[in-house]
Amino acid sequence: MTVRPCLPWPDKRLRSRAEEVGEITDEIRAIWDDMIDTMEAMPGVGLAAPQIGVMLRLAVVDGSVERGKAVRLANPEILHSSVELREHEEASPNLPGVSARIKRPRAVTVRFLNEQGMMDRRDFVGIEATSVQHQIDHLNGKMYFDHLSKVKRDMLLRKARKSG
Image (cartoon, rainbow, N blue to C red; front, side):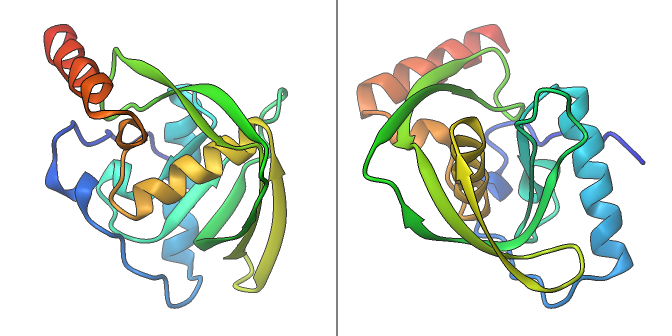
C-alpha cells in the first residue's frame, strides 16, 4: 500500500486518453490499492490512474461518510445520465489551491469491469455521481476546468500559477 505522487499540471499525460484494461490482474489490483491510499491521503472522493501517471482506464470512487467503501472501476463507461443537474465544488490534486463549481448530471449509470474481472453496472447519485464523471473525464484527458467558460478557466489557471 502506497501513497503515490500526483502529476503536476500541465503534465501532458493529464491531456492523454488512458488505455483500456484487458483483464483484471494482481498488478491492476495493486494499482487500485495505491490509488485508494492516495485518494484517502488527500482526502478525496475519487481518483483516476492518469492522475498518478498510470495511463490505464482505472478509477476509484468513495463518497461514503465512514470511508473504506471505494468502488474500483476499470474501463468505466456512462450508459445513462440524469437530466437533472447538480452543482458541486470540484478540485484536483494535480492543480492544488484552486477549485470551481461545476454542473454535472445528478445521477449516472456506469458500466465497468469490477475487481473480479466481471462486467458490472452501478447507479451513482450525488457526490459519487459527480466523482465518477470527474474520473471518467481524467481517463479521457479532460480536467474539471474544461467545463468552465474560457474566461473562468483562464482566471482559474492564472490563480493556480500564483498559488503554486
